[in-house]
Each structure stands twice: as C-alpha cells, then as structure tokens.
Length: 362
Image 1: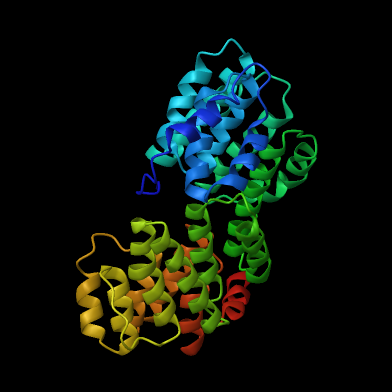
Image 2: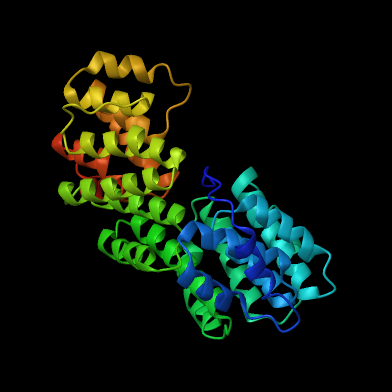
C-alpha cells in the first residue's frame, strides 16, 4: 500500500539539480541519495530520487532504481521503470525487469509461480545481485504458501551471495529484505526475542522508508503481546504516530481497528477500547463476557479464519472449537506464535499438548 500523500511538489530548481547529475558518467544512485538526504527532508528526497531513477542513463542505475522504488512502496513507478528495463539492450536489465514484474504481480495480484523450472529458466546472467533476488523470490514464493523451510536452507547461500555485492544501495536493501524475512520467520516459529532483534535492526536502518517502518513497528508491538503489555502499547503508539505523521490512512485503520483491540483483548484490558472490525469487536465482547454478542458478530462472517475460530471458542467456551483453531494455526499457517492463544485457553481447561502427543504415539 503506497503512501496516500503525494508529498510536496519539487521546485524547478530542485529538479534541475537532479537533472545536472544525469549523464554517461553519472554517480551511483546511492551517492545521489546520500547527497539529497543531506539537503532535504525524507519525502522530498524520495521524490527527487524517483526523478533521478527515470532520468538516469547507466544500466546499473536503471536496475538499482527498480529496487529503490520497490523498497519505498512506489509500485506504479516500479511498473514504469520495469517497462524501461524490458526494452534495454542489456540482457541483465531485461532479466531484472522480468523478476520485478513478478514482484509487482505477487504484491498487487497475489500471483504465484506455477512452474518453478520454467520461471527460473529465464535467467542466465552471471550476476550475484540477480542471484540474491532469485533466492528472495524462491523464499517469498514458498512463504506465501506458509512453507518456511527455504528460509533456513537458503540462508547460507544468501549470505554468501550478499558478500559479493558491490553496489552499496543494493547491499543495504537486500539486507533489509533478509532482516524482514528473518523477523517474520522467527516470529512464526515462536522465537519472539530473536524476531524482535531483527525488527529493531530494520527500524534502526536509516534507509528504511516511513511506510515500511510503520508496518514493522506495528508488527513488533504484537510480538510483545504475551510478555510485555506496556511495551506492546508503546510500540503501537509509535506506529500510530508514524501513520498520522505521514498520512498512512490504511495503516492507521489497521492499527486502530485490529492491532490495538487485539492486544488489549489478549491482555484482558478492554475498557474504553472500540473497533470497527467485526472480528475484533467479537474478540473484545468474548473477553468481556458478552458471549452472545460475540457469537452474533462472528455469525455474520462467511468463513472463519483460525483467529476468528479462536474467538468463537472463547465465546462458546468450547474445547473442540479451540482445539480446531489451534490445529489450523499450526497446520494451515504454521503460526506457532499465535497458536499459543488457543493453547493457553486449552491448558486452562485441562488440555496438555504433550499428553496428546504421547496418546497419539500409542
């Protein structure tokens, strides 16, 4: 989701300063970004760097420009630059364009790779930067199907390839990509402390854009939902402040209607908490003991997610529903962190996962 605010219109003098950088001997995109960052605020810098990405003449800058735009959420602009690279005389640029087109299709249209062999046969360039992007693509494609096995098996190869990257901006952005993958992977695996380390590495990186930072901080808040309610609330407020500052209305809605009520409901602190989200309203009602209200709200939903089934199990005080929610979180989404929610309720009702495992063996 792109920032909905287009930002200030750059002055003709500012645009001219960017045009003067362009030419056969133009500086690398990272150098341009450094120079602009020293002179302008974040939003103006993004706009001027975007202009450079479309004016630049070197093949390398045209390739790296796609990564810059993509990592800043400028997806319409990525599509434009993909078209430029598709028409390049440089085979490497054309291969990059093919890959970024998939990134766009995946993000905007939930595209999947139906034939991996055919998809990856498109690439023949000996390019460690492209190799990293291919590894990321393979991981993304598997993680989209809740298969996180490639995160561990490809980690060593990815690290080896990253060490060979000479372009500074690509190396930084690829490390951001890697940190985000590892954050989500360890969070799903219920390794909260490790995931928090990766999240903090992300938000402390000076090149992470405000939209991505808001997203990571909001998710970081949820990693503290069981163990540190005060810290969870503090990170939520930080994410909310970013959303307000940069007019990120989509994220502000998610924070206010989903994350805030969820964190408060899990910690049984529901007084004064409201939401426009039906499922989270049911969650709050169930925690407050308003069981009929919770059930009525959930009955308006067509098909319950594992989370929503957990809310129904709470409202009905039904072990079978809680158990099914637990199994779905493990089997369907491989989410061992949030599977703790129904598991905690099952334990309160005398259920023990270890006893079940022993029983299943015998």
